[in-house]
Length: 257
Length: 346
Image (cartoon, rainbow over all chains, first blue to last red; front, side, top):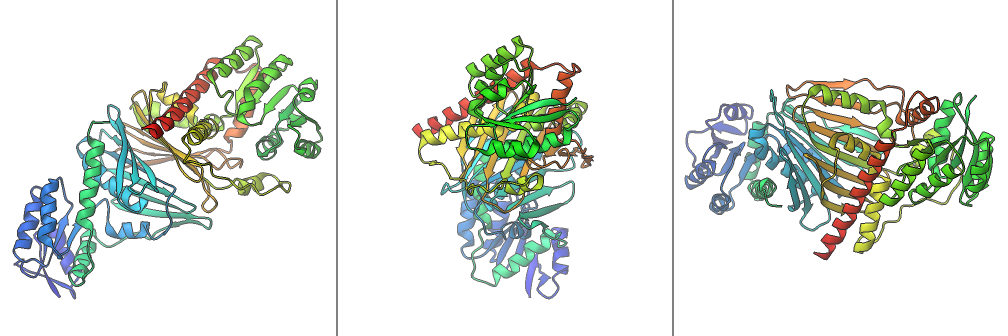
């Protein structure tokens, strides 16, 4: 049983849904501290670690300064920082990477309302990284009045991918991401906020398998991961991945060809 | 009385595609002659349908029963065979895409066809697919500009689809040898061929929406054989990705179109098969989804029916459109080739 200091109602529910593993705590010391990803979340996370938190969960992180994030990583040391990304859920990622095949190519398409375009693009870059099988870099970028196009490849050059980003105007029921990794088997991830869910389909010679729908709340997934990470010596790469994805998204959003 | 068709080429494009398609249109067309370059397969195909066979194009073009010439040979031969057919006085041609691999060829072919009033249809089956008309209507009705076009293609070996529509003669295993992608000149040349041989399926559709080609942003080979290409066409971002896999999952051939308002997917059936039109799905900004019904008519049947309509004087040949489509594809192919070479030199 580990204490969880959480102000966000959905995380307090997650604690209630893990009654044998977690309980609400009023202090940070030795506890998992949940930090809302809005505003100055990096500073909030550092404060929690300074107060001897055992682990930190960052819920739906917004924009951040990379230098601040690097400092946060140094402050954390061995203590895990779990990043809860609604469009890049860890359990959906696990389903998508279950096919252990190197992709011939990866494509990611994104559509989002103009005000959310860059934030959603960062999560789409995350899907590119996941399906490409490792860290990526931008090799080309261009744009039109309301769309962007990027060539992204795994840093070892083995897997190449492309990302297209467009904006939707009018009534916005949420962002949409489709990521496809093509090998002899094919993985297709569809994240559609209008559905409030993500789907993973794996096509092989035997047909198409649709991974079962996830009924667990993403906050509970993040909390389980934090509990597990706090009790083990396994490193968690969430924050490093977030920084890498943000750096690529920034490059794609930057109007320099 | 069905029109007599002479088929130039005896590969899968003839045996599994056009012969199988024409069998469905036997009230309008009948194959009377098959010619190949000397491999001997023409005789075998001709025997199946009770047609004559020959080597080269001379005998076929001299055959008075041949009213319609179907050109199913490798792309580099298309232009010269069109010109030969026109010179032989043939008045109807269905040519597999592309009609030409250079601007000069394209201009000469279209000039000859126009001057002789030849009924010309290019086998751009995706353009003729009834689903494309629905998509154009959907986009027009939505009234929002197109922003991105994303074409995603994954093709296992064609054998499984040939087997769905014909019985193939024993042949040496058709393994796909990968080019030497490390050689820039090879990579550039192969990508150019892939644009004109594979991407060309969809480029007339892209041109329908984009009108003009501006610049290539990137062009990369995808091993074992494929490409990933990004380009700007007017105010539209276009991304092409295709690869020939060694097996596994069924073919994926999807065009995703994002307008300011809607996300439209067109999912084409695999090549060769007759499984109806492409499927069309639309997601609107309010989260609603619409799926259009699939029609029994496919693009292969539709392109032959289009030729019949021209022969019957119900439709006119769109010479300017055919030429513009060819030039669009050649412009892109040239730019892709140049981009590969430029990146290698950088």
